[in-house]
Length: 391
Ligand SMILES: [Zn+2]
View 1 (cartoon, rainbow, N blue to C red):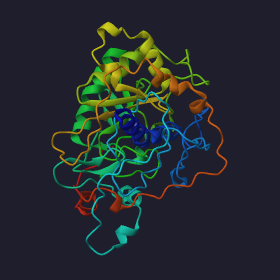
View 2: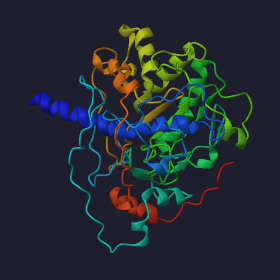
View 3: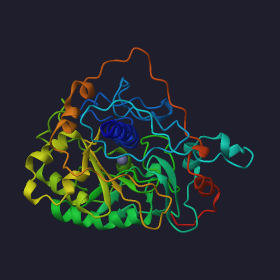
View 4: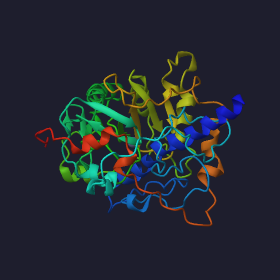
């Protein structure tokens, strides 16, 4: 019984955590400018299909028959289950999200907003709400009240892809980055860091690129040093992140991987309010190889393998104390994730060479406002906080 329960939650975890992270692979692709796709590596094969409307990206289209991340934008009416870390001893298979109490149906009569997809509504909100900051819901299903903006250029950071208007987050995320950027610069010797997507001004589902990044607690940071000059808007659109993984997806690329990357990842994972740091499995494997286990203070356990993430880390913060409606992700399991089948799984044929499905995957139903926590309806309706957009 215990093991059945464990497996069940393990599987659910994979599905849900997959949902959170899979879109991040798309992010990798999304980081390449449309006209100059990242040719430094073939896309990792097992990325699940993106819903058609997600495709501003060149994500591989081969859908996976089975495993982890076939987590289309959550289609269930129940909120996604709280996933334990995605570590299972058996290869994950698709499992239904555990049934959790469904959110109450909207009490008011259907409005025009109810008929729009949540991503359209949230992408249209150019400014954050008034009111105190709160992360609402779960990383792949929620929104953000009182979001704050990270200045696009700081002493030790620059934000990329300004056209996306995704340099917003809960204040804890902005504070994290203001603290992490100089630390990372110091341990790597880099001039600073390059920051990819955070969240939209009011969070919510993104029109493309990720399933998570919805509640203002997720951020992508590129695996490359900030250049010496302040990048122009155009450069911030066109510059691509550096890929650290070899074409076979099993090794690191010796031309791009450096010991500084270890310090960079470790510094992120060591920050106390960091919940997870997602990296490609080949990178996790290398960290396991070089890390002095006797001195490991627990940071390595927070670094988890996931699809993509060969050109950036995804840092996820814990739910902040001021956000009672933020849904916690269960802590990572006690081990460092280096031994056993959990890591090996990522190098199996199932992941690297999945069989082609015989029937095309059905695109998931898009999330509607009513699929999000009820408070997100208020977030969409709330008056805007007038802020002067940073240049
Ligand atoms: Zn991300």
